[in-house]
Length: 401
Image 1: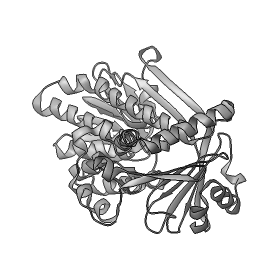
Image 2: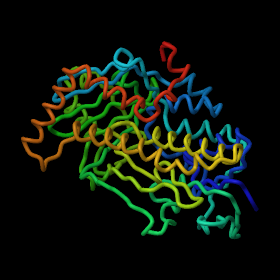
Image 3: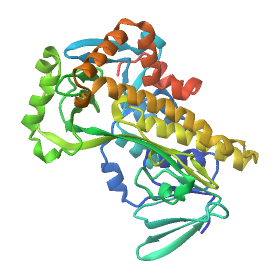
Image 4: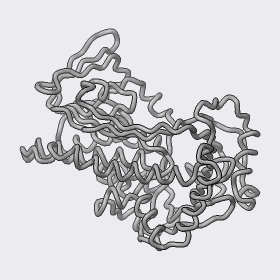
């Protein structure tokens, strides 16, 4: 069996890369070790930058997103009950869209025309410094795919990065001493936009999936177990970290999903090894505080798709030669912003009273400076990582979502 490109991983990054390539007439097969139902069952955040929305439209996968996604013109930040809204539209004329990552994955699955092989076991990458090929097992039989390029979009724990010789790879990592305990509930959101709250008891986030489904988070120790938290305990803790008016209007109910997500910052360098490329979570992880993870993965595969299309249609290696350096520049900017948001909004007991006073001073500077707010808005909406490519007719319309 032969394909021009083998994509390892059928999450949103791998599916998007496959879709962009197939629209350009390039033959790409996707290998995924889990079932399609398992992939769709993963609960992830869904704040889409304008560049990601535009990319979904380029992939012709934006119909349901544009019908159901919620346009957000800003976010609210809170520190010990003192709140300030960051108005993206007024500050920089940009917005974001709330649309679940699960729905992005579903839309890309539904529109895919090429081959996706689910439950592909023991995927192994071979000879990517020369004539690459990939082996895997399916239904008890071993298969081989010869190809021109391999794209590793299989996440932090995937085989792609692990296949790179250790001496060829440099990694940078910070593991945070806390995680996010998240609860999904079928209740209307407490606010029209996201609320990020710093409190002496810890960070809290009020998020949403739709007009009738909400997602809430509280900071907990990294080794905390979700099973230790009853619904009542969670709601009581969340209310304690919100300003009184928001806490009073919070609608609670039985959780339909509850889990703890660890927080880490991670970058691998470089991202090209002969004919193997890394993209998405295989290349980098960001704390979810700045809503960068999915968007950064989409920016990776947009650049990789353009580079591969240039190679196959224009017979130029310029794009693939520049891929690693180009995307790493954007990755580190997103890492910086996610680290900054995390540092501002979470409690770090080891920094003591001095650390909290510094955080308060940072919050007061931010809320008192238009320039600082513009910087936050540019980073949060993706202007820094997408540039002029982050324009979208869908988000420029002032519709009520």
